[in-house]
Length: 232
Length: 226
Image 1 (cartoon, each protein chain N blue to C red):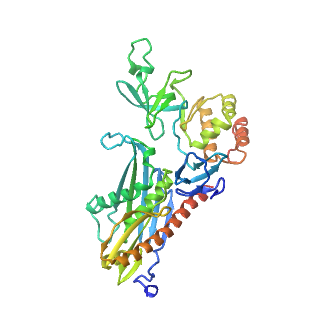
Image 2: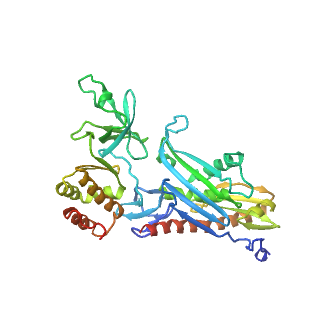
Image 3: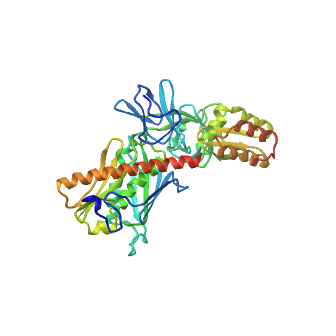
């Protein structure tokens, strides 16, 4: 049943949007990544690890991970008011929490690692792409990590479980569930859900998300490898 | 069992081996297996394994010669920017020998100093020392920033390159481990030394780099581009 279902943009239930990953796009940042997925365009920069002078915010035994997610005013069809708002503050917090388990923060006491994620164009799924990009940029900055983190969204559209929702499916669908995992150990670092799914549908959706994440993981490794080939 | 070959490119989280080896730089142990924690080349040795990343940032070790800029002075110490993640500190006691002179007249903010790492503790506080032969403040010369492979090339394998530069171009050169090189000579020679260092910096892994560098030092104004 699921196999014959075609979505509005012509994808089947388990197809991702076209994805393009690139690292080392910024010269002034210690590490950077650029992602295109469908009509999403996201750029991520990493600064640090660098010493944090504010004693109030620094930890004596580990580094602090600070994340800033920001949408450009021109990223959506109606102009977005620039500056932080409730949504971007929330996404900043959850992206930093999704990435934290993978980094060896204890190697850099008293330091901070700053991630800034700029969304140039948004079409649904920016938080997952933000996580993918931040993980790639951290690898580019050569910060010690347990694993790359890969993420993707699953959801329920017209009673079908589908992978990688776009903006329309996100708004009109019955459920939306972004998931981030560490593919090596298959640990889930981040999971959100809104809408309604039965227990069985949830299991099915989670399995689909794992498959999607593992595919993205291959893309991430390929992207890092291409950078090395360019360097040679 | 080895899951990757020696000198292969690995990614964060790549499984390297489940042999009982010592895990060196760039690796971590999980459930008795050794994984890589950054992207780079893996090197297997008889009893340990390590990963060398492409950029390879500098981390200070006891006894390293470093060049730093004074960024702040307090009652008890100077804070020094070492071109690394962490700032170093130079205690004022290093200079209070016998005379009660005004310390700010000796070392000031923005001064460039040649120092040695005295101690790095477990939370990466870098204690520096100036009490050793040849250490102190730079009053002239030029500082050039280079990448870590260049430092490795100039300070470990081919130290004679520096003596060649000093001999043929009448320049004084100090290579500090933290990626800074101090050069002093006439204006013309400084420019040429910088040109040579730039050349090394761009192709640190080039085949026969030593011979190439030797020839351009001995025949000044030779063609770098050839």
